[in-house]
Image 1 (cartoon, one colour):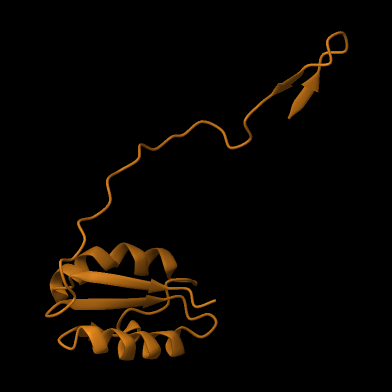
Image 2 (cartoon, rainbow, N blue to C red):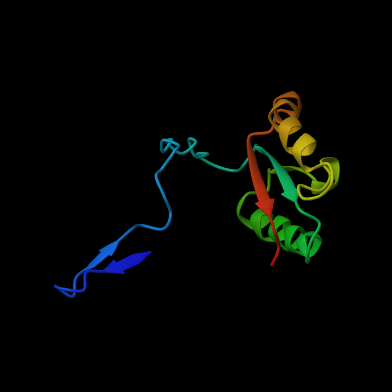
Length: 108
C-alpha cells in the first residue's frame, strides 16, 4: 500500500509481508556421508514423484552404494485428507525406523 503526499510528491510505503512472527532456527546438522545411512522418501502423490525417486535412488547409489531406503509408499501422501495426521506422525515414525535423513519430493 502506498499513499502519495500531494504537496511533496513523496510516497509512504508499507511492507506487504507483515511482521515476522517466528524466529529463524538453525539448519539441521548435515550428514557427513550417505553411505550406511537410512534415507526416508516423502511424496505428495502428485506429478511424477515415483519416477523421480527411482531416478534419485539409481543416481545416489552410484556415489553411495550402502544407502538404505525407506520408500514413500511406507508413509502415505503428504498432501491430502490425512495430511495433518501423516505429517504429525513422521518424527516418531522416523525415530522408530532409525531414519537418518529425509528427501521430500513434490516432483514438478
